[in-house]
Length: 539
Image (cartoon, rainbow, N blue to C red; front, top):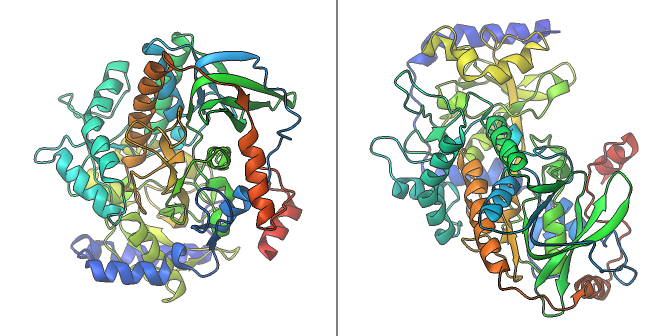
């Protein structure tokens, strides 16, 4: 396949400017210019893409339209027709089989709890396994948790929860040591020390990584730990509703067996939601880097139960996702390329932004280059993007560097006869992360007693823009903290009569606003039928 002739001609422009660009320095934008760029070009600022939530604890708050549609829909079950006699009772129910869920289950188990993990797909199928870049830990000479804190707060435009950010930066070294003890094969120097690299918005190189498949390596190790410790788990078993008791405490969940369509309750003294994000809703019809199961399930069921949401008007669009070939549109092209000095260039071979600005700024600059300035590259099917000049990896780091640091992406593009050692990659922003989520404390506990959240489903730590490298460390820190507290607290919890009255109350609140939607939520799986795609475009 490879690049068509018209794109190869533009690659020639990229090659002509390489030697000149190697000596070029582009300063970071001033705060005022960053804000102007975001307001004019970032997708979050477009008109008509958000609306107020009509009912529930965040009534009147803005959120993206796609999420509000689900929050204002009805449950998959009739709360008056459900038998809540539990088929199974446990101390801690973990919902989600990615990194956050596995970390929570392992920690709860180690603290003496009777644990069950349920997951919508297979154990390990999650955004975690797709994480390429790595995780932030302040280990560089001169770096510190204080500097990590300042970078994180600044990257989030100081809308982050300061207490949770403090927990993140102080606990990060403990997680790194935990993974070292478990045998995660982090990339190391010849002397055995851990390698580190840069991410946008960071004042020091603090990304710790396993080539460009960090999440896959970590998830492999965690999955083996879950299996070795014989922690019980159910696959193809998503949550479709939370269960409360008559005192308002979380007491379990309704589970759907996707293989049989049977719905059944599980009673639990504590529930930990680690259900991931929102990407497969395709916010504003952007392609997404997200896993197939990222359909906002945890947000929906927790919101109906009365959990407050935070910053759900803010979505992260990763600057560099594949724009060609179309078969892998939305594939994450890791930020570590830019951390290694790879340039973003337009159709004339010109750099147009400091590549280590924060993600929202870089994404906005790319959109500006393509739309306002008309300096993008157009594919035969009409998709647009800019070049990520990947051959600079081996020019700067030497022969063999691409295999050493970017083996996964080298392999993925080679399937389409594109050699990223010699040819640049066409990229454009894609929907990557929900910056907000469920409102929690530093242990992941929500405002509903005995209900916890960890990872992307939880909000607060990232504010309105996440720094690269902070998501992996976030989900493991708060997965472990939630698992520990849930297990210890479960020893003294006594549940009252179980009920789904909160679902009925939510229905009444919708009816008072004249809302009566027939689409059941959570949707569980994205709908890619042709007719549904046309309907969404028309909307």
